[in-house]
Amino acid sequence: MIEPTGAAADAATSIFNLPGYTVISATVLEDGRRQIIVETDQPPGCPSCGVVATRRKERRFQRIRDIPVAGAVEVLWSKYRWHCEEPKCARLSFFESTAQVPRRARSTGRLRDHVVDAVINSGRAVSETAAAFAVSWWLVRAALTEACLLTQPEVDELSPRILGIDEHRFRSVRYFRATDSASWIRHEPWMTTIVDLDTGQVLGVVDGRDHKGVGDWLFARPLQWRLGVQVVAIDPSAAFRKALRMWLPRTAVAVDHFHLVSLGNQAMTEARQNLSQRVKGRRGRGVDKAWAHRMLLLRAGDALSEKAAHRLAEVFAADDPTGKLQAVWKVKEQLRVLLRTNSLADAAAAKEDLKVLVEEAGRPETNKLYRTICRWWNEIEVLIVTGATTGKVEGNNTGIKHIKGKSVNRPLMTGHAVDFQKLRVLSCR
View (spheres, rainbow, N blue to C red):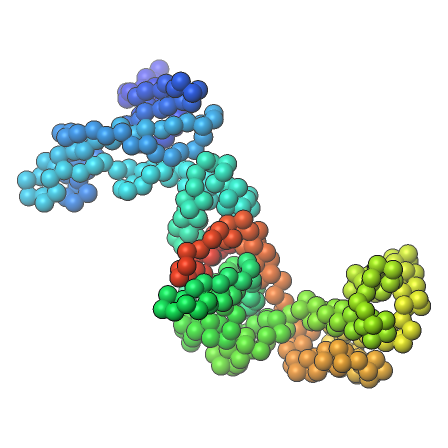
């Protein structure tokens, strides 16, 4: 028979289960809340010399925030100040601290771990997590920042082959009064995310969406790191392309499929609005079939059901006297056909067909779209050959927006800038 040689923890300590602490009191207050008083189970060592203390000087009760244990609990730490027994140590006394509640901390480590897990793994908003754990919004944000920065890998030690770069607007425009004058400064809340498309891991987050932010980030990478990048997927952004030509001149650049389709849909919408003003002298109304089925015009033609295709035919028959609306729709659909090709020869043939349809449409919206296609044709060819898109970047941006959706809209103090480098939330995944 084996008998334990050490003292077993009491039931309250076992249930509360806070490492390094012993429950010395558990009471129910008059308002029904439970109050638990704990103290450390081992004498601490001096933070300066490391000598284990043996003599207490004074005691204070410190309220600490902790996870709910079968409901809300008020936790008080019976915290002692200890004498340092080392004569040569300059520190005469010190308050104890533990791994769960370090020096100057007011919440337990397991509470911070739980709120980080709730945001990162469960996808809950920061404000929602703060309300669920009865803590402040700032505590959750601080825990996220600390956890993410600790787990952020050393980017220079990685060897990414395919990068994705895309900007992300995570809240509305803000105005701040300048500190040295009475003028107001417009602050655009844009940030640019850089992702390894092979792994989906966030490599960097930079301020703004211009070439300088991305260029400075690429310039900070070692030469061997930059030479190892083979393909970079971006949206049709001249600023990003300028930064890549400067710091990754040998890297192939692919333009994203989704953004090109979006440009086609934008041309379709602008043509519908302009034609309505030209033909009817007013904007579209609910009685107009083109306006009532405006979203149908943006859907892929080959994905329409029989009923939807019939409604679209009614739009062209009843609300398109000039035939220009249908001509623009054909241009938009031909752009989709071009982007679905699997070879450069098929893409070149589809581009010629697109040019014919653009000339037949004779609309400024489609002419502008075709000029964009021509300016980005080299990048479109890389897209067709490699299939590299910014899909994983968009996924990370959407995750950031979802996680921070209820938190980044909190008001900022005038004159305070946002440290966007601390927004690497998804790199913790």
